[in-house]
Amino acid sequence: MPGRITSLFRTELPIVQAGMVWVSGWRLASAVSAAGALGLIGAGSMKPELLREHITKARAATDRTFGVNLPLLRGDIGALIDVVAEERVPVVFTAAGHPGRHIERFKRYGATVVHVVANVKQALKAQECGCDAVVAEGFEAGGHNGMDELTTLTLVPLIADAVSVPVIAAGGIADGRQMAAAFALGAEGVQVGTRFAATVESSGHDDYKRRIVEAGEGDTVLTYRGILPVRALRNPFMASVEREERERGMTRERMMELHAKGRERKGIFEGDWQEGEMEMGQSAALVRDVPPAREVVRRMMEEFHAARERLARSG
Amino acid sequence: MPGRITSLFRTELPIVQAGMVWVSGWRLASAVSAAGALGLIGAGSMKPELLREHITKARAATDRTFGVNLPLLRGDIGALIDVVAEERVPVVFTAAGHPGRHIERFKRYGATVVHVVANVKQALKAQECGCDAVVAEGFEAGGHNGMDELTTLTLVPLIADAVSVPVIAAGGIADGRQMAAAFALGAEGVQVGTRFAATVESSGHDDYKRRIVEAGEGDTVLTYRGILPVRALRNPFMASVEREERERGMTRERMMELHAKGRERKGIFEGDWQEGEMEMGQSAALVRDVPPAREVVRRMMEEFHAARERLARSG
Image (cartoon, rainbow over all chains, first blue to last red; front, side, top):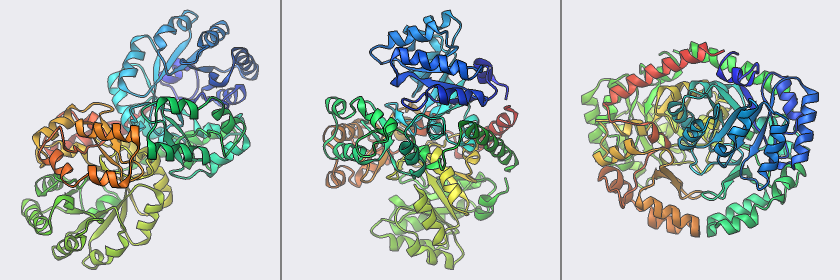
């Protein structure tokens, strides 16, 4: 499927598997890349040397392009960047923080750099500092989320109008109908998280995957609004945070206490339903099984073509 | 554009202008219907006899189909329903509450009945009690909003999978790219609010229309979450509500105090920037002028066809 996104990433398909903490290691990233899309290793939950190990293993597993997702706000981000640059990872997705400070480092060895944004201001800034594309991520996305609460349906056309680099739509996308919708809005690629979190190759706990499959509409909740928004399953822990927030409000200090580092690991990697944070997007309601990553890619393209044909026949 | 929605409404185009308090009287509704779409008189801000007057005037202004939107939770809903039934309004949209109790009344004289829903449960219930279609309205919509915070991009495919009646997508839709996206998701029509609120024929105050045009991304806010969510422009009043909610939480009692009846009138009809509630959706960021309603319809169809062609050419 030729286009600006597949040229940038040298992939067959304009689908990106989102970098996800505790979920997307070398196994998932290489399976997605082998299927013709772009797999990303989520460095957010890795120490620098573990990241290196995952890059090495992904290379051994596939000769297709894969990338790394870097959360720029991490205290030791310098050490992660060193690993990515030393290993000359061909595609780097950056999230949160300011890519401008680091982009030269990646560009010097010829990498493609993409920044994840949640509003037009951030998209323009990313373009200005040399990013090759932007991910426009809406309110429905799982995990960390923008402050403006713009949904994918409104965010993507706003950003497509504002920038000249290609836009990758993210947030809420789990099937090919939604991929076709994203393209109608002006996106040239999609980034898909939750759907890939519930695959055989995902390193999330089996109970976490099962919870994604069982999640229905309205089962995720966005907490810490206006501070550092996070979307996750409404399990006992998140329900208590939601209740507290609604009844008493929320401060940054209290958020730091609640959203302690171990929560994501507990929920996603250890499958702790009571006390963990099981991050997932609203699209969990559309996920009904745990197939291999390759099958997700195949279905998505099949549904994309079907939606496109249905649209072409309408009216 | 033949399809189930245009057959139901006997219109040329599958576009519905949302019923909006203080905005969509006979003037806007008849202009939209005359342009080939479906105009709705928003009964929410009308006393029964005023509603009758608007129906009469809309009939005088156009011989095309128009409808009425009824907020079922109103104390005097019985009297509004009497007017609609006596006038044999051919299309009735119901919002909030339970349509089941009233649907027979409309069906008896042959009306088409559509219920506005914000989750699958409500959609199934509406279908079961005999509604001819449902409006699936997402989190990005202006005014009163569902409790589940499902966005249009996730809500529409979930509902399209669940019901057999046609689905009309709403929430965030201001242009034809978004209309094409809605169709890719499985919708067969779109309901458009904010874009029509900023038209010549809208009865909103000029300052309210100007504020829609000037609103940028992130300028609307959803307040009273989990109680009775309302999306409006972040003006001084709404910013104070937002602050209070974040710092101290919100109760139903306090909400009733703040969201008093006069607020909507003050904001939308009187253009009071300081103290009013200027309801609008996230799509306000895509609205850049105040054209006649006919021009909105024309552009939307032009953009719809362009998006469809662009999508057909992709890959």
